[in-house]
Length: 277
Image (tube, rainbow, N blue to C red):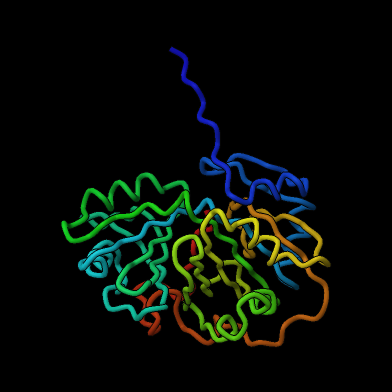
C-alpha cells in the first residue's frame, strides 16, 4: 500500500511570506521561508540592524495546576520550580536515565510553566510530558493557537519598544512580561539566539498578521535568512532590514553570565546556544 505524504503545516504568518515572495521550503513539518534576498545579505542585516523571524513552528506547552512548577522542575535539569514570575530558563529535558529528550525554554507564567520546545520534537515532547504528568497538573497544547516572532539584532530594542514602550526596554536577559487574556494575550521576552540582542513576541494566532504589520515599518525592506548569527544552525526564517545607526545599548548578554538560571548559576556552559530548530 502506498503511503500518502502529509501536507506541511503553515504558520499564521504564511500569507505574508507568500505575498512578499519568500522562497518556501519544508522544515520540521512546516512550510517555512528560507530566504528573500540571500543568506549573506540577511546575515549582515541581523548583525548591523535588525531581523524579524517567524518562529511559530516552535511548540508551546503550558503546565497548569497546583503541581505545575514542581512537575516542570522534575522534567528539566535546571531549577525552575522556584523561578520568579517573568523569568525564563534555557534547559535540557531528560529521561529518567539522564538522556536528553530536547532542549527548551521554561517561562514562569504566574503559577504556570510555559515550555517552548523544538518544532521537530513537539509530538515526542508533549507525549512524554503527558505520560509522566501527576494528577494535579494539566498539560495544555497551545501550539496551534500561538504565533511567535523573534526580533533580533542591535536595533531590536528600538523596534519592540515602538510597540511595548518602557516595559520592553526594561527587560533584562532571559526576562519576560505578559499582558491580556484569551485572544488578547501577549508575551514578550528577551532571550535571543543569533548572537545579537533579541526579543520574542508571542500572540494568539488570530492576531498574528496584525502583529506582523505593527512590527514591520513602512520603510523596511524584506529579506530572509537561513542559519543563526553563528552561521551554523539550520533555521528557516525571514528578516526585515532597517537602515540607520546601530543602537548604543550595551549587549544584554554581557550583563548576565548564563543562559540558564536567572541567578547566573547554570549547570550548563555559559556559552550554550539554543537550537534554532
